[in-house]
Length: 198
Image (cartoon, rainbow, N blue to C red):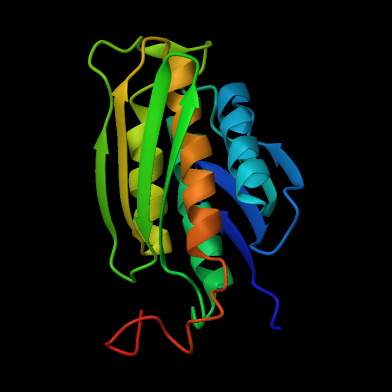
């Protein structure tokens, strides 16, 4: 079996990012972006997706965390797409629901080749988690990841009170859905599309 790995180095005047991913890993993570809560979320993605994931980002945190988080999500999406290869034999569609105390996240994914995001969270979320993570960045992370991974993603949090729980449940549910969507299905032969391409 061909290794399903991706490696992206992305440099701008604002950030330097390295992402390495192995879709057939064991959940080993090595993440350092300088934004503690975001590191915690990326660790959830690797661990619960059973992806080996390395992320190293240095960014202009003296301004704020926006560029660091955004550029990391872009590189992560690019690496994920690279690792997918031709997508032959994968399940393609998957969904996962993950509770975290009072919060519930529901994620549905299509490894479609066409980027599209639907995202909803409860109103009235706290604006910050810790000193560096603006909670409006969660949607932006997903937008950036989806656009570069070229997947269709629906993320819905019907309820929750604690911002940490609301965001973390989304990353865990995303991890589980991606894990199932990229898994090989013995009933699938070739590209899982009537078009013959994804």
